[in-house]
Length: 56
Image 1 (cartoon, rainbow, N blue to C red):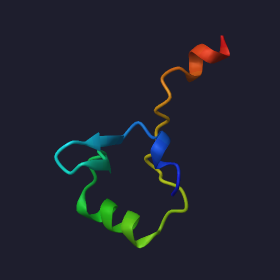
Image 2: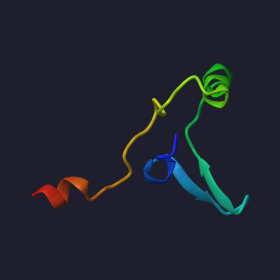
Image 3: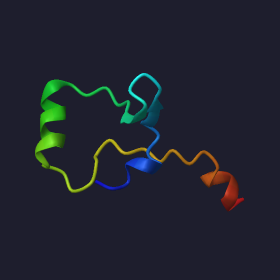
Image 4: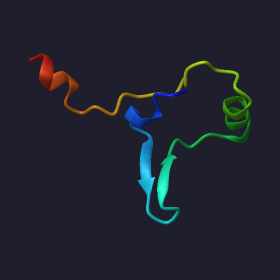
């Protein structure tokens, strides 16, 4: 899962001084993510706000 940097849920956390995923997962969903059950994140949402504007 290397597309986190372009995900809308990936944001800088000033308290931890690093980038984190801000997606609110329950315990079971988080366990599946950590154990590597997915090749690609099923919760990925493109964070590029200008993607539609560039097509026009």
